[in-house]
Length: 521
Image 1 (cartoon, rainbow, N blue to C red):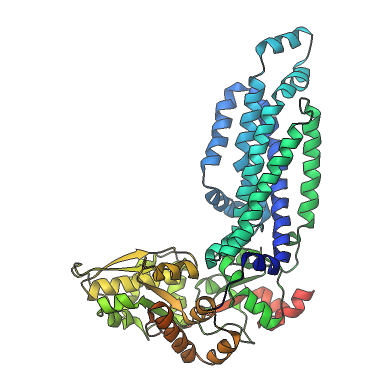
Image 2: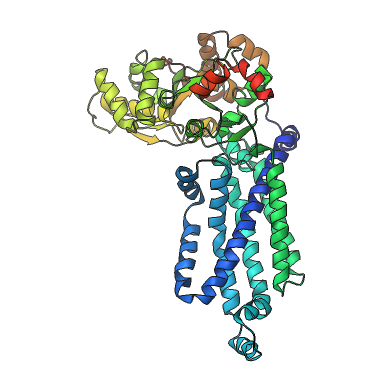
């Protein structure tokens, strides 16, 4: 198995991308913090004058902060699509509470005696606000701004899930690939950035902030910084932009393999796997990664670019099972293999289409297929043990897991427990190795390139055909992990690069190598 880089080797290799995403993260955070302060302080002042609505305003701000941040981002997508705008608005909504509340609290805590004395001196309400209340409340207000800054930097990592870039690209890619170095490369700078923001604000707070002018200077400086960083961040202005899922960006058979094989360099953003197709359909990105059997290719009128240099190895799907389970319950092997030869590429695409686009449940689609194939049987007694079936986080995996569950329940006395939504390859595979699941569906190319990671000369010898890839991964998995690959199901769900059909035809792009000229323009 290939040796993983040390943390510092990883940083050295990814320094350019890390710098790019750090700049993007700072731009997002500064822009959101500027707008949060510009909105929050006036709103806090307003509710000190209109106290009847103070409970409502603070309540709404409080509720917004209790909503899970990823859910808030998801809510913004139908309204604003993906990218920077929904990310910044989400950050503002999430960080608004401490600024509004501290402004309201700080002004309200100014002694009534002092206010009465100011009014006795003939001060107007505006003079009272700027010469008495705001100067005295400024330390409390600044405490709220510091809290908002830390929240903003932290939540900004989630912006990567909707294509806004930032250090979250490393974090989500690392989670998908179970790559600790990648996770730390995003998490450590994000944590240090939050501490830096808080430190700089604390130093500013120690200056003469007992007057309102410094806060205006602070806002002006924040605006200039956010504007400069935003427009210098390389991710925000590309004529041809790709959107890739976190796992694809880090896998040897994903983006790194494509860039190496074709000599390409993509301007790209990381997007949640569930959003890449929507991003392409809505013309927010021009190129995405996907799977050749995905039903959304047909649904969204996308086209698969021909892999003319064969960067992607065969990805024939098979159930992989712990040897211990096959020895303990030998009856499951022939049952699991009952669907083999009945599902080709077009069949799997049609099944995925029903889930991805027609919104049918994976269980219903699986049952309908088994009924049509005359394989469906009611559940038998469940007193001989339990099989735990895992699934990665996409429709095809859910459908196949449901098929296996139904077959095992119908043809054996075993019970089945499903553990779905397990994320990417490494998470699923580590769960299998640890005995937390007993089986799941894996792909031969993934087993070769991502899990085994043999030397390049071995890969070149093995990928000559699908059978040699299967035999190699099966033998190595048995030796290294005591895991068996059952016979292939019958379809090849290869990685693919996808474009909108009308755009690909307009640009004359049919194969991956044709992207070279367009990326250089």
